[in-house]
Image: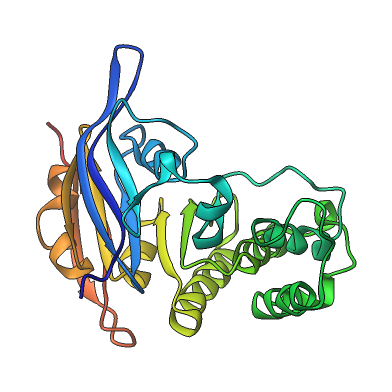
Length: 264
């Protein structure tokens, strides 16, 4: 049985004459966590935005459970795939609970109000993300970490099978970064949500991912488990950094510390 939930096939994305991504092919397997990494400007966010239907490709297709997302009804896609962008600053003047309830829109007709099942799911989403006690507060008065958890509550209220995240820890301090990464891991393990995310911190990517996808020069440079990625020369070849790779005894995952920039 094929456990692929999302497939990127021969994807090319360009802005006028400038090609950002070329002939990208990816198979995203159900129930795993994937992190997309690469240097600034390599096309990570462009890939995520295209996978989220926010950008149309020049060539190729993206299949969600075998169906082209650009030829599928928006609500049908939203029932299976939740998306969180890099900067969630809109809709600040609403309560956390109202924001969470927006996650149910894909499952209702436009004239339907929130039903009993919807209320139960929103309650579940708020509790799952740890913002149940904040549900009557306005989103715009929350801390960065609280706000990101509130947006995650909205996303999982969709009851998605896959969640696309663009740098979910951006602008957060170290404690809140870890808080969000642990929450993402929990949603994957307990709710079996497939996660695809762009991460800036490669040590976070190595610690929390089943596979890392390295983008370099418009192409996929490599895709594999964290150990194979970090030991494959990616740090030197893509990031121009000489580093020592160590093992986290608690998780068994690799981490590194950079020693110097490689002059080329």
